Length: 367
Image 1 (cartoon, rainbow, N blue to C red):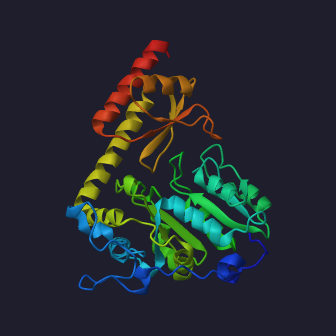
Image 2: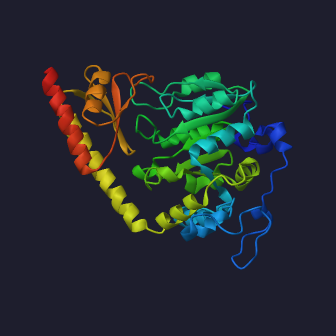
């Protein structure tokens, strides 16, 4: 599965980085040039020294920490990973964009993805002029198809994206198969673990030192309930993190987002309480939905959602739920998800209401 039939030990990060990126002189912001200390008088960044109209939040007249050191220290403590191996982006989407910018030469290199999966891998690739090669997951259980993967890898294969737990199917990709890809492929493997906290599987992030070509994506949007802050996490070798920091926008995460995220990470008891409730509700939803005649199949899930196959047109059920003020995701246009709805796990009251409305519709159409 190698690009050049080489061994895993032949991985060379610098050979993968685009030439124009290697020659970039990074923008040095005022806050990188001189670290912020409260007692200093800052007259270096063209900020408004008199403050903002938000007098009760006067610190917002200053630029945020461009490298988010305090927030990274909280994440480092939580995940037992050095801050030098952590990058924070404006959502994982910024990180995906950076990965393409660093490693993929427009109109030359290719990226391999495994549909059905998260749509931004393909969209971002097309924006950057990458040739995005799709190898569908297996139809039976949504796993990697190694026979087909081997056929498409060539000298210009630079990036592979794997999502586990996978979106929109919800299942874990088998760990030994992920590791096989990482070890055999001499390009960059991006493992998106946005939903890892809902899974019983261990994160690959704790083994990042074993895999120099691996980038693990995580986020504060899902299990931590901070989607509005837009904080994505990349965990990788210090060398890869260096290049991300070199070409990112100077102040990519706002001061507000950093402050709130730090407060949230200090409240772990509430995090675990919410996580426990989500997992409990996921099992409750799986049991209840499986008993409704309208539902053909509820797929196994290690995420905070369920992929549900409908016995008839999922579009009709989707529209009925919209009319009842319940919004789920209709996924029929996605390969291997025909007549499927993706349903996020809500509160117990929200879940009960959804189940009630699906039962109502089942009776209405007499299935």
